Image (cartoon, rainbow, N blue to C red; front, side, top):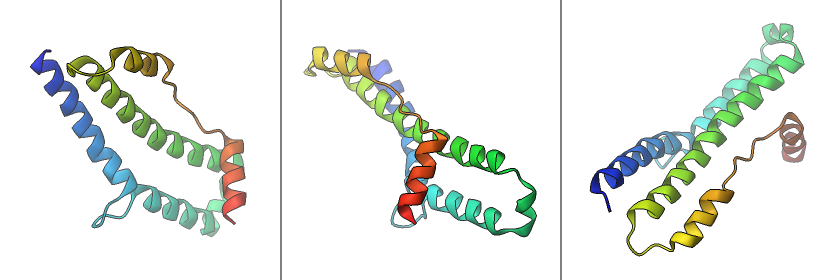
Length: 120
C-alpha cells in the first residue's frame, strides 16, 4: 500500500476530525451546535428579527444544519475510504459495498420542524 496515500487520507481525516470535534464539543470546549442553536434562539427572540421572513429564517436553520451534517458524513466516508485503500487485511468487498452505497441524508425543513416540535 502507498504510504503517501495513507498519510494524505489520514491527514484529511485529521483535519475533518478537528472540525467535527468543534461541532460536537468536548470536555473543554462547548459544541458549535450549541453555540449556533443559542445564537439562532437569540436572533429569534430579538425584536428586530421579527423583520426577517419566517421562510428566510427557516432556511438559515436548514443551511446551518446541512453544513454540519455534511461535514460529519464526509468524515465517515473518508475514514472508510482510507481503510479500504490503505489496509492490507481489510474486507475490501464489504468496504466497496459500503462506499458504493454511501449516501448523504440531507435534512429538510419538515424534518427540522418535526424535531423542534418533539423537543418542546
